[in-house]
Length: 302
Image (cartoon, rainbow, N blue to C red; front, side, top):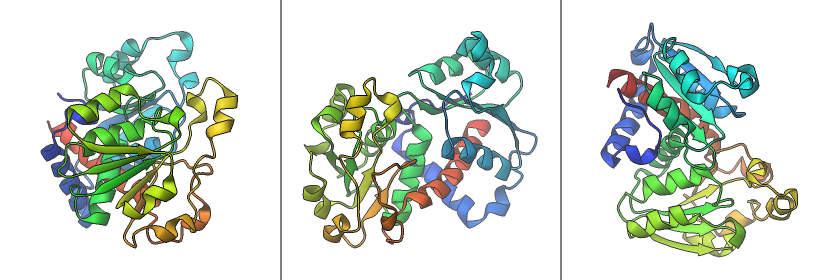
């Protein structure tokens, strides 16, 4: 039995295989429509989510399986004080695989140690979000044709953004990938992520200027400044609109730039950008379902 808690648990070859599987599902969905018949996914979401939770549910339903679960901690026995370990043991008796979103870093790992069935980390605090990263990688592969030899700009909240942390961890293992880390000084990558990049001799530089970085980018990964991660409302208000992507700012970008965003967005991408063919963030949503289908199959068949 195998779980997925951290994107680094997957070797680059395994990521490539999952992407290939997802692309086969895209090409021939009917071939997979009954692969999980009789199997049940439990979605245990202790934190609000639209895309991730519904993507997991749609993935399992499209595989012919069924779904149980909850969408907020208040509607679970956590509101009565039940531990994550006990919830996982209980749900492991009722489902074949679990997807968990939790505000506390490490909670999905605790669940995996106790559930008795595979557990997928659907986001834990500011730590990791491996299936969003798989959706990101599938999108980049389909848009750019490769995952190596790219210059990737990550813009916005790089301190608390778990999607950025996971993306950097995954793409730093591919050949000749260069990162441009665009953020105010207060939201730069945490020391743990910096140490990981340094240990891998990854190529990266930091800047606070999106305009300066734009012309050299193959991929631009925008993120929102997350209000829920801030202790101080004043700090959030001061930093929330630091970067806003507009059609004017894209004028200096490459014609084949891919603009990604894990969503939800607030103000950081103008709706006027949506019509630009370089906008890929809603493609990411669609790709997320297919790569989660591929991951569910891999973990259930392991």
